[in-house]
Image (cartoon, rainbow, N blue to C red; front, top):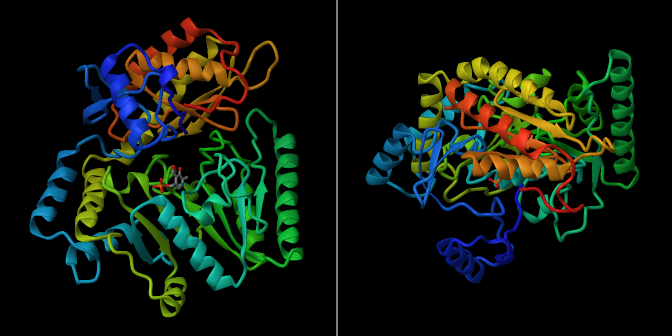
Length: 450
Ligand SMILES: Cc1ncc(COP(=O)(O)O)c(C=O)c1O
């Protein structure tokens, strides 16, 4: 996630200072920005972005420009539709239907309806409403370090970011088990304990009279720090939720659209099929677009009870963007590219890890990976070292971030348009900065990740 930049942190550049002051006067001082020296990006192409001083950066962070910054096909599709007709969603439009059909064809049979919206938050909010009305229950299970959106119902179940709303009575947080570095016996024990914890959470919701409406998870556990759960955990969790009458919602805002390469959707990595799937960020390549994909019976039931419409969600212009994303992914074989580049990235990260006693794991898969930092003296998580590396590679012209409860896992999640030479550039810069920064904490406890 991100850190607010205060004027005190601003460097000497007068333009940056001026923009920051204007931002604070209009958007407020808590509107978050990345980096201690905020970036003013003015253009992008592919995986490159340029700042207002003409400096070029390799974007190894952003999943919104999924098929690459300013992709000409996406821009052309949006432009053409905008010139022809741009309005709301309550007229017939063949392009919207073409897009819906193409999108749904990427899911298993049974996940055969989509309700379009404008963001991941809206997609999750609708999933909550559908699940609660279907089950008659209120209870929500989430992981204990997760984020699913901005609405009040989602703020009440947020565990990874500050939220003024108290954590809801009707929610339970699950510790996500991390099998990194464990042998088979220890992994089996961890799995059993984690599933017992699920049973206890379900029982507790039942005892409190809430019941279980849904479990809402990011299947790659990205905000959590790319946790490697034991095989069978997600399946076991889903089975328990369903046995309690609840629905399974996979939040694919970060994990989806071929991010892993090996699967189009993150839940497929766990061999489950959810009841609802929520989509956002990469869906429109920068055009705001979200969606809730669900079983026909669930949408039928919800539609009969609620006059639900969404003025902009899946309007013809958004549909043009979404459709272009799917077409570019196919034409440029971007999932195949992710499959090919994932081992290059992973091997390079292992090489970097081998150079530093403070890097204890390479995490993640596909084109979403990271390095985990600890303080070699204490073995404890070292968010300060990760922060220094994020800031250092930014100065060296590469954009990444960090995640996890302690902000000690690098977040490397480039547009799928990245090429092997870019991956090698990223790894070279990272190696240089890790060597320069060394390890050991550089950050006071409690500072927010950037
Ligand atoms: C996993 C996940 N779900 C949902 C959201 C919310 O999406 P949006 O900001 O588009 O509302 C985010 C945003 O960061 C996210 O990471």
